Length: 80
Image 1: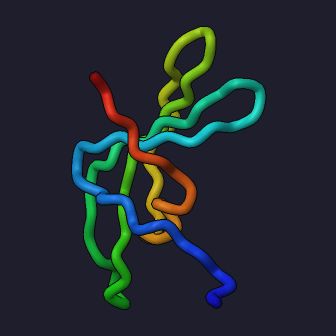
Image 2 (image 1 turned 90 degrees about the vertical axis):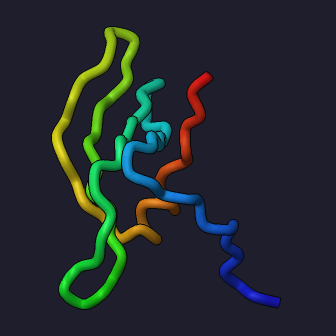
């Protein structure tokens, strides 16, 4: 029996939106802007981050994570 159970990887595509909940009813919204590999061949994702608060949307800039780390932190958002 494996100790580390993981859900199947979420599909990460350019233009897709992901989110995660933070403290005090704040959500972090991530828009994927680039997918590629670093110099070691590890898949990464670059994304723009915004915070969704009761006062509205607040842009926070760009970040990059390995795709595995990204999909562990964020869940895909479906609009519509």
